[in-house]
Amino acid sequence: MGLGFFRAGLIAGGSAADIIRVADTAREDKFNKGINDFVDNNVPKFMEARQKRVGIKNRLSEELKTVVSRFIKPAVGETVDVNSQYELAEKLLFDNGGKIENIDAKYKYEMMNSAKPKDYSATNFISNYFNGMPKGKEGSRTVDQILTSRANQLAPDPTIDIEGKAEALAGIKDSVFFKMDRGTVADRLKSATGYTGPVQTTTNPYSDITTGLPSADLDALAVRKSRELQQESNVLEIEAKKNTAAIGQYPVGKITDVFNDYANNNYVINGVDAKRDLKTGKMIPLLDKPKLVLKSQQDALAQTIQQLLNDKSFLPETPEKSKTNILPSLIPMVDGMQPQEIPKTKFNNMTIADPQKIKIGMVYMDKDNKKYIYYATDPNDSSKVDISKKYYFSN
Image 1 (cartoon, one colour):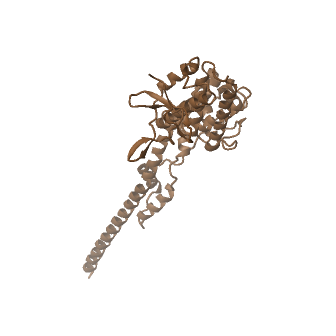
Image 2: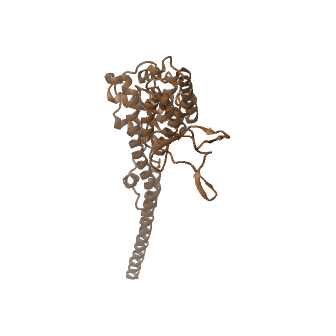
Image 3: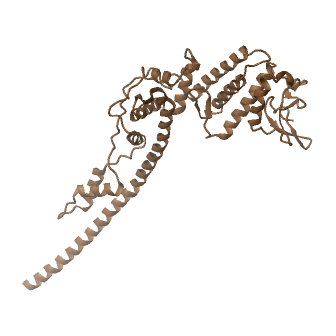
């Protein structure tokens, strides 16, 4: 009987071991599935955040270079170290919603409201903005540190509870005889996902400086309002030139000024990004919207010619009277302007020029590649252009 009992015990022990092995395999499978599911659910989120940070750093790098070259360096020169210049640029940029166009709008607003707009410069703007000319700061971050910190702030890794997940997964493998090490599981999760925990962002040493000018939002320099202000300012400038110009004559160079005023206004109306030449005040369009840049310039030339027609400085029917300062300025501008296509309409199954859509002063081109303008309205209908009244700028 003793032998039989011993054999029975061995058999029973073997069955129990088999059961334990099956249970261990099931726990291992569940544990591995939990790990894989966690990685599959979270790694794409981390990858997306990292890709966003790369994009932010690339874009912000160019924006900070622009702000430094356009506003900071012309004001502080070499008196402020490069790192501090970029810190000031970041401060100025993100004080204004992270948009260069808000800074440009504010600069334009301050310039037009200054005592001497033509003498206004980046030095005036920065000095007023920071309540005095800023100085370099010890401990200013490098450009890369600024970019990394701001990118981590704008596109942080998703926050996940690594320790809690490690506790849950380790519990799957726990048994009467074994307790899974939680730290080992946590390390495995961190390694698989690349998660390092929340990244501490660094601070700008100029962050505690209060500016002498309100923010773009507070002084109503949101996009729409800033455009209205700029349009109003340019209209006033144009009206002033109309009032001061001698009838029938413009001083040398003034027609170009009139064209630039109209072009500046059109860039704003058409939403064309542009940067200001701080010496001349002229807006230089960026070539991100070439069709709108061209339209702005075409319309500006048409508006300039309309003004010259209205004040009778330009007399197409007696052009010899316009040869002193008018035509010598207009002809090269027309030669350099890409003409607009003539508006067409259908009439009796024929395609003809549409006199209601043609604009006076707009540069068009005929089939012989000769540039011309229309300069008068239809005597019987002022809403139409008189298509018999053409002036050719080339013979």
